[in-house]
Amino acid sequence: MSVKKSGGRPANEEASAALKAAALRLVRETGYEKVSIAAIIAEAGVARQTLYNRWDTKADLILEAIFEATNSYAAEPPLDSAQDYRSQLEDFLIKVFEHLKLDGGTIRSLIASSQQDAKFHASFHAKFVLPREQMMTLMLRRAQDQGALSPARNVEVLSTMIHGAFWYRLLNRGVLDATFAKEIVAETFA
Image 1 (cartoon, rainbow, N blue to C red):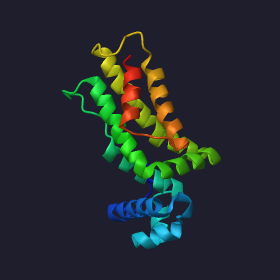
Image 2 (cartoon, one colour):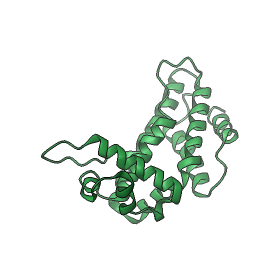
Image 3 (spheres, rainbow, N blue to C red):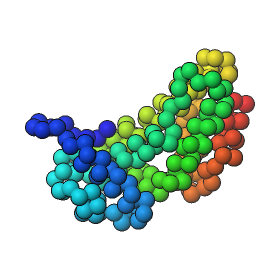
Image 4 (cartoon, rainbow, N blue to C red):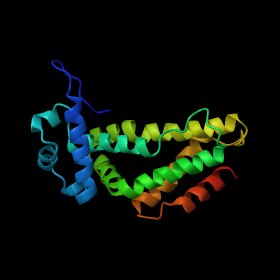
């Protein structure tokens, strides 16, 4: 993700893992805005330069930690799943919403940061938003290819609409739960 490439010795994976774990734990406990770089490096037990050898900003570090957490909650369903496409999408959305209950505040803060910093916006879009959007579009395309979704439906637009629905609720602190996931799936496959 945003780990810098440099000459010299390879990045210490233990230090990177410690920094991501510390950053994620602190933002979950106190909120993104209240967490400082100093607090993260103290919690991780590393030098400040260790962090800056890997990430340009606090936002870049948190983004990578959140992206990894997101993938542990809601990874792309396997191609060989025996589950029908409606159930796959519903289960996927429920897992996404479970993750947003935990890290929604941090993601809202990252979205705010991305609106104020063009470089971080590009990074946030490329490393978080776009991969999740591509995953959703691929799920819908597979459903369409197998006849579960009408060939007349535009899967890119459907993917955007699904993301729009839950990003809107996330940003407005609306309810993201299994009922909403079922409603999205019902509309998608209507």
